[in-house]
Structures are given as C-alpha cells and as structure tokens.
Amino acid sequence: MFLLIILSSFLVCLLILFYRIRLQWYFQYKRNSSNLTAEQIYHHLCCYEFPFECFYGINLAFYRTFVSPTISKVYYQTNTIAGETEKRVNDTDILMHAWIDYGLDSEEGQASIEHLNNIHGIFSNRTRNEDFVYVLCCFIVDTIRMIDVFGWRHLDEREKQALFTFYKKVGEKMNLEDLPRSLEESYSIVNNYTTNNISSNETEAGKVLTNSIHKLVQKWYGFLLPKSLIESLLNALLYVVGGENFHKKLGLKQPSSISLYVIYFLAILRRDFMYFMPPRTTPHRLSDLLMKQKYSCSASKTKFTQIGPSKILAKIESKN
Image 1 (cartoon, rainbow, N blue to C red):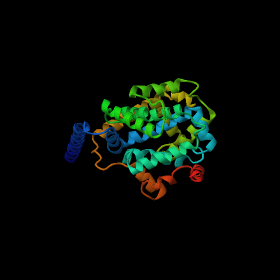
Image 2: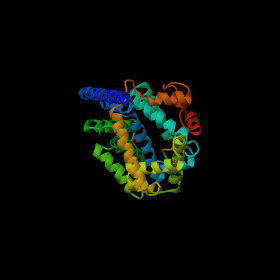
Image 3: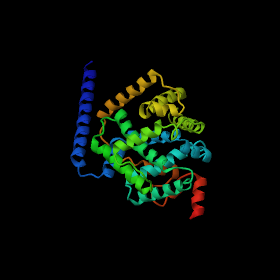
Image 4: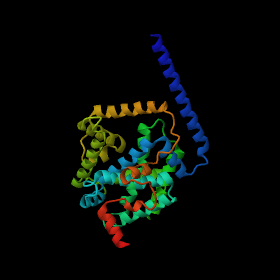
C-alpha cells in the first residue's frame, strides 16, 4: 500500500512537471510569435505542436475532392487513386508537406510547387479554376477544424490567419485566379461549393474513391481494430469535421449517435493526454520521412520529379 502511494505520488509529480514544461514552452512561443511570419507560424503548428492534427486535416480535406464531379471524374478515369491508393496519398503528402517543412520559397518548396503545377497541367482542360480554389480553401478550413476537435488548445486568430496567408500564397504560386481575400471568404467558398448541387454532388466515381481511401485507412489500422469499427469511426469523423451536407454527398450513411460520442470522447481523451506530453524539440518533417520510407532518399529538389503516377510522369517527360 505504501509503495502504491509512493508510485502514485511520483506519477502525479511527473505529470505536473510535464504540464509545466508544456505551458512554459507554449508561452515562450507566444512571446515570440509576434516576430514570426505566417509560414513560420504554420511550420511551428505542423512540425512541432500539432503534427497529428495537421496531417489528418490535410488528408481529410483530400476527401473533399470526391464530392466534386469534375475532380472525381478525373481521378476515376485516370485510376490514380483507386488503382494506387497508398502511393497517391503518400505522394500528395510529400509534395504538400515539403512546402510546410522547408518553406514555399526554399529550393525544396519551389521544386515541389513546380512539379505539382506540371502534374496539374496535364489535366488543365478537364479541371476548373474554382475547383482548385475550393480544394485550397479546404486545407485551411479542415486543418483548423481538426485542431479545434483534437488539439490540446484552439488556434488564436493570428494562427488562423497564418494558415490563410500560407495557402493564399500557394494559390498564387499555382497561378490560380479569384483567390479568397480573407479567412471568412475561405469558409464561404467551401460552404457554397459544398451546398451547390452543380459544383458538388454524390457520384459513382466519388463513392468509388471514398471507398478506396476507406480501405487504405482500414489497412493502416487493421492491426488495432476490426475493419467494420474503423469504417464506422471514420464515417463519424468525416461527419464531425466536414459537416452533414459534405458527408451526405460522399454517399455515406448517417453515423450512429454512439460513433459520434466515441469520436468526441477520443478527442477529449487526446486533448487531456496532450496536456501532459512534453513538447516536441525537433521538427516532424513528414516529407523527408515519407521520402526515406517510400523512395529510399531524403527530400530534395532533384528527387521530387520521381513523385506521382507513372503514366503522368511519362507525359510530363515527353513534353520537356
């Protein structure tokens, strides 16, 4: 009994220590944040404070493309998702996180943007400017929403504006037109696109693509949970983050009250757990990690040309 009391007291003291360390680290970041650029703030959020939330925010925004008949048709016809689902997701994460990990104006960031523009250029006659602007805004909206739900704290207004500024700059580098002029307009673009039955709707192509990503997530976490439970929780997560209208246009069933309660319970559990986790001291550079895992090399401007569907890379090569 005495030993149990000693161990419990030690654990409580350790948790208090970790909590104090996290708060001191956070307050130091807040004091310095007024001197940080939008890119530096977003780098801090993604690579240090919220790597989990930012990763899933970006990847859940990827689901948003499946309600667009224009984009989902291109994906479906080229078979770049249904045929090579995991490679497609990893390649997208590498190219996008290179901007975050190294900066948009770094050699890596510029090479990633240039390569992505070349890939999109292959489908320029089949996609619309408004589709790309919509997807760009989804990265802002869904990342903020993921942090709101699962983060140990909410973002302040300056941090939200940093996400908007970052992705607006991405849009400019992608030569997009009619970009949002404010964070509020970004939310309006996502909402209007999703509620408009012309720009977004349930399609067979969209359902096939959604099912492909569902299967990939089941593959990732199948060693932990039954596939049916993973599907139920993913269904509920998409509803919580994306909203009812978006969820319906994916062709998914209304999630049960129990699955929604489980998502919110897990969010609270994670938030409380993160209060007592010591802060990250080295950046979580996902682009570099994935390049080493999938391509056996570090992220660099010369290696990004290897990334993407093989048929599309061949078309880009033939044009050069």
